[in-house]
Image (cartoon, rainbow, N blue to C red; front, top):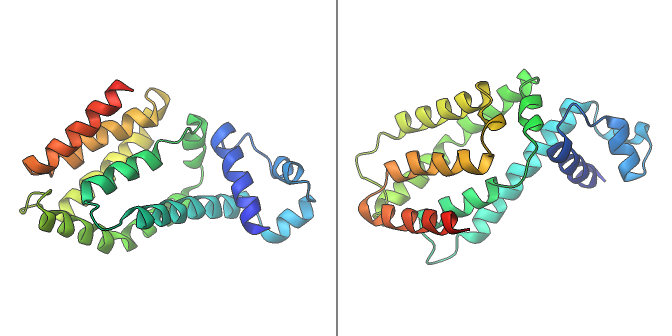
Length: 195
């Protein structure tokens, strides 16, 4: 039931934004009582945290399954991009900024994942797709600052998330690549432009 609630809430939040969706709406959609919903999730913020965690876990699971022999770091970056470009109402991003404790939890989770990011960059260097002299800590801070800027300036209201992630890949992924990596990224970006 917990996962069923999270999946329904995610769909509703992504479609209509967080503020517009009431706990009553979620309970009615699932044909359960509001009391049952509150017994499982104390409040909307706890539910929203669960939704974001589920989304992240599903993305990581899909990326791990995608990472089979013969897959390289550029393939993984492209797959991650494809996962991130799902349709989400801009109101969702605006509404999430109203939950500072949730934003802090997201930051903490990113810090915990710093080790995985470093390993990924090292792998890219070993595969010959990333430049060997990358200052990983600086790169991670710049990438984090960019995400913060996108959210604080509400760029998602002016540009689609697809365009924002596309530009992010052009700046960061392409920026740390060797010529071998750039060729693969440019090939992918050309395919995207043709769609």
